[in-house]
Image (cartoon, rainbow, N blue to C red; front, side):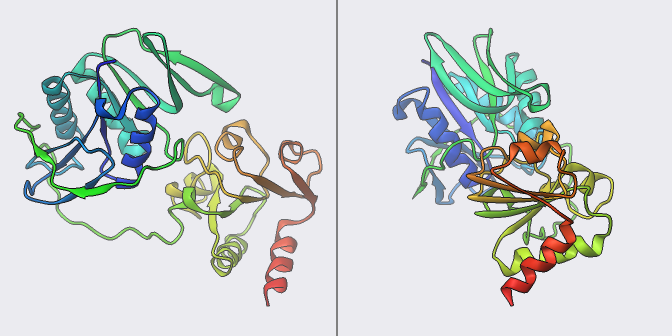
Length: 306
């Protein structure tokens, strides 16, 4: 198989991409790309063969970054580029596919080789089924969903400087502000509370967030609580439209169990559902189900912690 290029500006996600790449080829065929403005920086990468490209445009300029990656892939003859299927990665995959004139597959859960083809498994029909697709072009861009693979540990070393034409900037970064990380990294939580439309008052959602904090757990939501009610950020959505989470324990509060949501949590080791509707779909999907008012359950759990 031709060489594989992996790229993510997140070191943990880059480690996951490296693990996925090893399913497709030997480690000597996998290389990583890092893009920045300091060519003398010592960096951390899971790949021994790591290229560095100095790009004046900020990496938040996805159009410029796509041009840079395409030029790198051409120079090192990489026929497969692996990206992370997060929000930026999905946009980057589309732009990169256009520049490389190749197929693009996003939201991949796993990849494997079948003869000369790379087969990709991913959710389809809103998570109702798992489909397996493959590329019909000579080169491909595949964006793999976070947490699909274990992250390989990176090592600190000086990367090889690569001289390629980089993308010109169309975006000016005016200001940067720190992102609230309190609950945003829900995909790494070992215990995860998920709130659904069973909550009618934001004050009760606040109690769940407080409870999660006391238990060192994560707190997430179904899509409407973020996009419609604005009680959560969009980084805290579980499901096809959000993140895939694999906690040891998932406690679903007032969640109906739409298939689009279930696709994001079904790999949890233990799922407990609380709903006042005994016929809710989630009750039949979970390992344990409890018919009752979610607010009473939250109050009861808080009392147990006192």
